[in-house]
Length: 558
Image 1 (cartoon, rainbow, N blue to C red):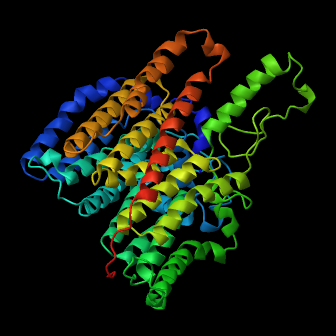
Image 2 (image 1 turned 135 degrees about the vertical axis):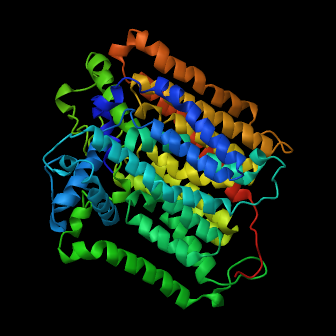
Image 3 (image 1 turned 90 degrees about the vertical axis):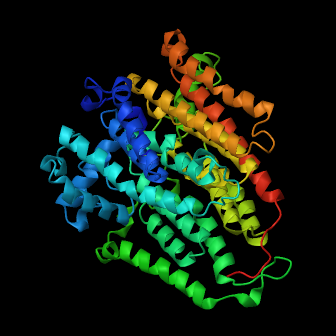
């Protein structure tokens, strides 16, 4: 996924994002429509439809806002899949944004292109680089909104898996209602898909639907959905260990001993074969045409790099570019601590993933990060096998796999935090301890996405949306668990409140200081470090919970 490295080149704003009437004033002028629709649907008793309709209207309000170069990336993929034969899809390089997603996503773009031609045929011309007409904008924005239907359905299915024992008398106190809001109105997904621009909604819909099927003991369907998901976007390989171990432990082995340990003679070869057949058939359907054309190696940009790790880490990038450069030019060379002839030149571009050597900081290799990631994942996988805790244990392992990959992976994008935030929403309405971890992870993870929207008109939008989502999350979960201990201790409260002063400094104070020209990396550096502390803390706290909780369910499995 090249979106991670594209951010430095996003200073070129969309002409449609700057038209009069957009931004915060546009939202305020049409906010009444959203509230009216919500009120009407809630009054009729169908609260889930009200929530889905309300967030859909909000997405429509965000159409004129800024979009990143991912908008051009997907337009180019529309053009490639529509105008070229399949044999050239992964060869075409007129644009630097070559097709580098797995085949199912290529077919997805191909299907969209046959609708796009009725909006603006010119957007499907491979040579129309950086093409962006008003009709193209409308089509691509509405295509994201329309495909979110799958996400809405997945959320509805996940709500069926929620235990309603804690349900209060009021609708807004019911766990299902709270979970629906936390997922449908998720701040991170809103700004990444409907402002920044990507197609994460329906992909997360596939993942959540797969999780729901495993909760419903429909293991084969869950495995099928996840296999399909892997062939849409390879980032979901992060959580593949959780799926593999859980399906083997809970589906292929059909019974446990009285002490909860595995009964080895209960192994079902037929079930294992069925899972293997699913993986084989989905892979054959996805990769078969390209294998036949002998171009499968072009489905991923580099044969030497694990496709699951091909994401740019902005923390490492900025640390290397700015800190190392500052130390070299202003201190290292002056004190003769560094030899200018031995300083390697950066080999990065603003849009393509490349490897480079740090000047001052130690260079981290893909192998080193792979080993760190595996070591971070293994304890959770062992717990899933030796101390089974049912579907909730699987979900915890999935989140830990996602967070471990996010923290220790090589070239990881900020947006990958949503891979942990969204599944964690399901746990947050079940136990107070999980709710506390969710609030810390979500608040910190969402704030770490702020640098993606760096344009002035979007500043009030992202602050307002995050404040609304965060306030609702904290207040609703505090109400749900009001009979238990407080969700935060004093240290956690102090840390979360610190995000406010950090935002004030980065957005309203730093631009007017003399440091802006000399140290322009400081706001991003502070944001990265501060958020890294919170995310690491949430990861550690969840790990402690997983390792200390007792196994559940010693009865025979269905």
